[in-house]
Amino acid sequence: MPDVWIIIISSSLGLLVGVLLGFILRVSVVEKGFQTAKNKSQSIIDNATTQAERIKKEKLLEARQEIHNLNLENDKVLKEKKANVAVLENKLHQREELLERRSSNLDKRELNLDRKEEVLDQRKAAVDEKNLELENLIKEQNEKLFEIANYTVEQAREIIMARVKEDMIADIDRFIRDEEERAKNEAQKKAKEIITGAIQKLAQDVTAETTVSVVALPNDEMKGRIIGREGRNIRTLEAMTGVDLIIDDTPEAVVLSGFDPIRREIAKRSLEALIQDGRIHPARIEEIVDKQRVEVDQFIRDKGDEAVFETGIGRVHPDLTKLIGRMHFRSSYGQNALKHSIETAFLAGKMAVELGENEVLAKRAGLLHDIGKSVDHEIEGSHVDIGLQLARKYHEPEAVLDAISSHHGDIEATTVIGVIVAAADALSAARPGARSESLENYINRLTQLEEISSQVAGVESAFAIQAGREVRVIVRPNEIDDERAHVVAREIRTQIEEKLSYPGTIKVTVIRETRAQDIAK
Figure: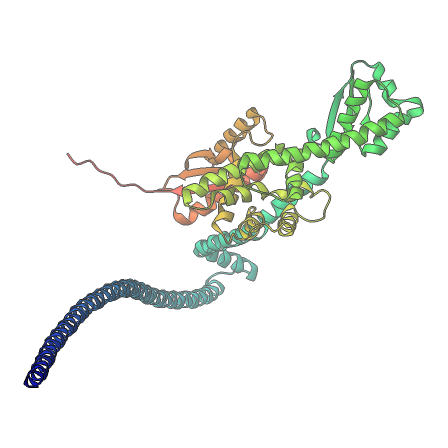
């Protein structure tokens, strides 16, 4: 029995010890797990803290970089705005300077105007005073003449008028000069344009070379074939072309007479083709004339295209190009109108380059300045008015219109191109040999101009220049005063008009010059 209890007690103790050992072991394991979890949590906290710091630093760097970029962009915008402000300030400063200069110029002009008005007032007062003195003097002279001399009223009037004429010679010369200048401005250029236009269009007997063409025949027998049976061939050719055929005693030649140069060219080509073909009868004549009319039309277009290409003025309306080609058959004083227009275009282009103007526009205006001449024998009006209508119709630039309207000086040019074309037109027409005039006649006319001018009293020397369009006269200053110089010019002009025959106008320029010189030794 005691052994049983011992066993029970031993077992209980063993169980108790096992339970204690298990509890202690469990506590030890739990403590170790808790410590491990604590360590892990601390590690996680440390990692999170490190990552947060890293993210914080990255975000901070990004924020600083963005702030830096924004500062750079703001600096750039600020610099641009400062530059714009500087440019605006500079422009404003320039405008202020310009306004100051203009204001200064206006002040000077106003001062000059005031001075001129004052001078004019003084001159007017002086003139009024002289007129009053003159009236009193005339009155006194009339009274004295009646008192001391037994003159009739007519005799007294003649004496007084003679003295007044001597006293007023300067005023008379000035009046005559003003009237001449006014007459020239109003009538001379217009009259010249009207006369030359009328001669070119109507006076068929004046320039035979522009109204007739000669066709050479292989033999005189061909004349009979051209006339045909009862004249049917020649009548058909004249009816088809509108040109008169003159068959006379001139050997181996037929003369074509007609004012229209294009019709005359068609007739000439048709007759030459018929002579070469040998078959001359009404049906063949009609066929050849129709064919030559087409060929001449194409020839005109080709001439226009060549002129446009040669001058390099750019694109031109096809109808206007054809009108340019028609000028090949137009002449003025024997000068071919198309060649004159091309020459004017080149001269105008050269002058435009020198003056800093548009060369192509100047050439275009020069080529088209006489475009009205291509149809002026078909349409009423001067070639200037016709040219303006054509240029407006084909929408040419304003400078071209101005050149056409002002190249003869009828109206004043409003553009630099208009002035250039007028000068180029005058140069092309004035150069020696440009217009039909023999060299011998040309030299004789220059010689006569100088001789006529030299024969006037007080003239020292005279020189004909500008291809005989101007004569410059140098007078002796001790014999001719300033007022008398105008009288000399008028006398020379009268002598030239009475003794010479010439196209256009001749300008007389009288030069009076006094020189003083000495030699330093």
